[in-house]
Image (cartoon, rainbow, N blue to C red; front, side, top):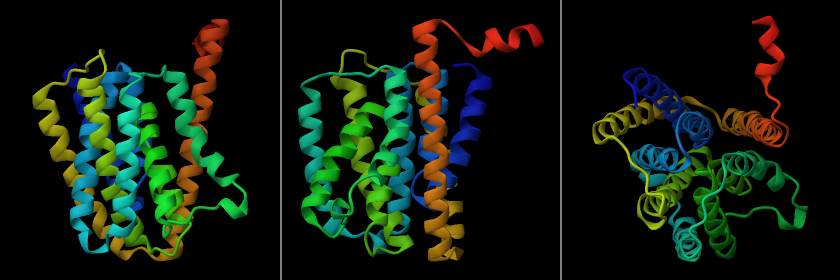
Length: 261
């Protein structure tokens, strides 16, 4: 990894961690997209897992009194089951598949019938979403938008959503680090010095974001969370479609803009 790439990634990490610190998600989706563009999928998963584990762990510590443990405990049980089952397969998706799943899940959640709407106060649903979100973490590296959409369906306030989501995602990203760092044959590698810098940057971004969340109203939080999920998810669906089109036809944007460049 070149020095310029490290600087760019640190800037992206600071910005995306700040965004995640306010809304509990979205920043991780953006960071995952950048990492997938610059690195192999296993390397991107490990670096993303390290930074997001730090970011969510620090965010959960900052808002520890707002974590709803009745949601966290069954979520973790579901996640452990998912990690155990997934480790038997050793599956690593292609980038287009990962991006399509990354962008498509929030839209699928919104299409669910009213009788199946999310309820974070249900232990059974917490177990189910724990399984789904950890599997999604292992497939795409991200589960924040789906997890936040789940919590938005209940009566939790913005601080409870951000805190509980952060605590749940600590387990999800730890599972991802374990899976891509040692379970599968394509073990990823990461520069230890850059890893230390990345951890420091993510802590700084989360700390600054806590002050902004404190001043935000409940209505602002929910409105902007829905908007961010829609915008970022749409981008990744479009990106996945583009990569699939290139793979099938050999067509690319360079063929269009080349004559005008």
